Image (tube, rainbow over all chains, first blue to last red; front, side, top):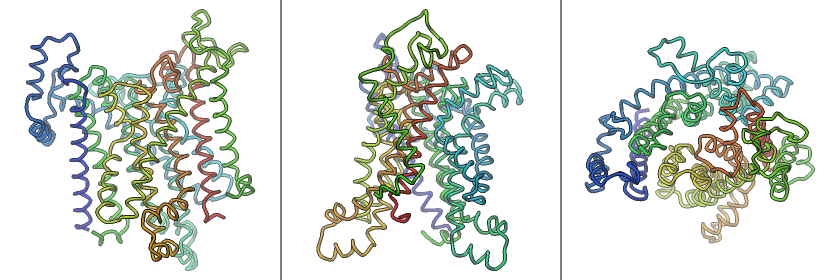
Amino acid sequence: MLNYTTKRALIAILTLLAASLVVFAMLEIVPGDPARLMLGMNATEDAVHNLQEQMGLNQPLAIRYFSWLGGLLTGDLGRSYTYSVPVFDLIMERVAVSLPLAAISLALSTLIALPVGIFAASKRGKFSDTLAMGVTQVGVAIPNFWFALLLVYLFAVTLRLVPAGGFPGWGAGFGVSLKSLILPSIALALPQAAILARVTRSALLEVLGEDYIRTARAKGLSKRQVLYRHALRNALIPVLTILGLQFGFLLAGTIIIENVFYLPGLGRLVFQAITQRDLIVVEGVVMLLIATLILVNLLVDLSYAIVDPRLRGRS
Amino acid sequence: MNIGKALANRSFCVGLIVTSLIALVALLSFVWAPYPVGAFDIAGKLKPPSAAHWLGTDHFGRDILSMIMVGSRNSIAVASVSVAIGAGIGVPLGLWGAATGGFVDEVLMRLNDLVFAFPALLSAVMITTVFGPGAINAIIAIGIFNIPVFARVARAAALSLWSREFVIAAGAIGKSPALITRDHILPNLASLLIVQATIQFSLGILAEAGLSYVGLGSQPPMPSWGRMLFEAQTMIGLAPHMALFPGLAIVITVLGLNLLGDGLHDVLDPRFQ
């Protein structure tokens, strides 16, 4: 177990390091001088020079990379040029919107998908299975931002049950804040739930065809007992894999959905930073998202070993 | 491929019909659309569907049906080129890794993990920051994301083929790994890769729509489904039809491709024959 854990963790750290090189290189291949690019064409020589100094652009490449990397490790992501505040503070403020949104959506999609997938697998070939699979097939094809627009039209514009967009801030009250996250979470969760339900069903069906399931049935266990005691646990690995992958799509989805609902999260931050050419903010947010993604996939890898004891011995 | 079996597969038939129709509409848009997409008609703006404008008009009075028809070209072009990039680079890498094994394989797979850590949207964000928005950059971002997908599929399937008797036999008579890959591995992977290409194509359509929606995809005046939805957003209370139809176009296209992919999977997979 320890061996397996160490190897996965090492790979994750190496991937993260390599990703930091890629993100750092991005700033380097910007055509022209980053300081001039950020300040625009009309900037004075002095202003450009000052920003170069502040960004450390007159130091050698390797030194710049390592001081940036060191900054990442200590939580110092530099200062935002447009907001004049540390990028770390800016990100923390926005994470307070994006993280709850992603977490609620993930929980919602899992809570919907697992029962639907299990139900469909237990009714294989029957009408209810066909119906469930038809609905999920359509669900997979729906872009979440379009679904979001339909939800806004129905629940915000027509029925006026929830706000169409905006976020009051957690300081304005837990209830109203949560209310403005309802539609965004549903818009994110349902298309993901469709994928997850399909994977759960096919993973279960695969397991239900195994010899030990027949043995379990032959020794007199009921279909229900076999499903919950033997099949479900063994079908968890593909489901976990997809959950890990989905987290990446969910993060990406959050970026788009925040723009539909005007939520002040990381997604809005990154798009505003692009239009304002605030490269340091873009770098910081992209690095944070990648680190999260790598961490989640590491956790998924490690959870395989908990679900499947055979993996623990492997290095 | 068994034609009779293909025709008996409902997913395959429905998927093939839907995708063919969409391809035909895209081709038709080169020679004919109800209205020119650049034609503004402010007096006739935001009109709901009517006999003159089957799907209504947008906030500039442009015909939505015409824009969806012309926009389909954009979606298809971006998705197909990015699949070509992904398959063109990913498949050879996957085959190389499987054929060589050891260190090369390990390095290739770790590089794959690295690219996988950048979802298409994040790559697009980075590429746009550096080079500015546009259809070409959307293609590159989605294409890069497709590379590890194809590399993984090709490698996994090729690895299992390398332990089969006919491949070992080809090695025993002195064929080089490169020739074995070309003559024995690749032909046996073809059906799997076609299915994967169909899936990535439909994901590409969705990704392109998402990128255009947030302004990172193709730029005006070229119509695109994603940007039509973005423009519809501010008009949602006044003209819901503006949001409805481009979205339906995306759903129908992606659904058709997914059904085709499922159908092809069943029809081409030797285990089901």
